[in-house]
Amino acid sequence: MGYGIIAVQGSKVTLLEMHALKLSGKKDNYERLSLIHAKVTELIREFKPHEFAIEAPFFGKNVQSMLKLGRAQGVAIAAAMQAGLPVSEYSPKKVKQSVTGNGNADKDQVWRMLQQILSIKEKPSTYDATDALAVAMCHYFQANAVTGGPGKKVKGWDDFIKKNPGRLR
Image 1: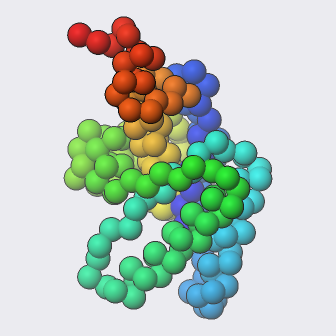
Image 2: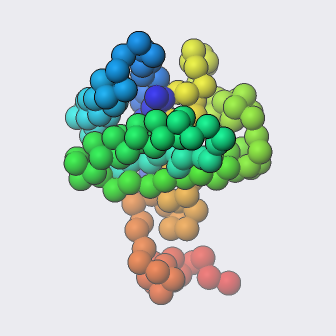
């Protein structure tokens, strides 16, 4: 399970942490779910995020893998909700599109774009971490694409127009 945590101040985005939790295949499935919940809870306590974004499950051919992935995502989402964080989900294609401009980009293209955007020097040992960071950046881009800036929450188009008069043509 990868995770990426960013800080946003104004229009400046900074990488706080990017890593992956390695879960031993020798551990019981429920033990692994417990480790995921504990890690997400620990990260929330440490970094005190305002929002939580996760990659939506993609449909694969292996039903057992999908079931395990869904459970893992559910545990992570439950930890975020328990902490009172709003949760957003993004499809893998949406994440790639947001970060690279190409919904079919490969993992290395996504990583190289993240390096440029966030001025990151060293590559993590796994793409799980970079995938998670890409989800965080996608969430940032999506939140700022409509509202025109961080922290400007809107409730529908009327509210958007009222809060963004300079963006009308």
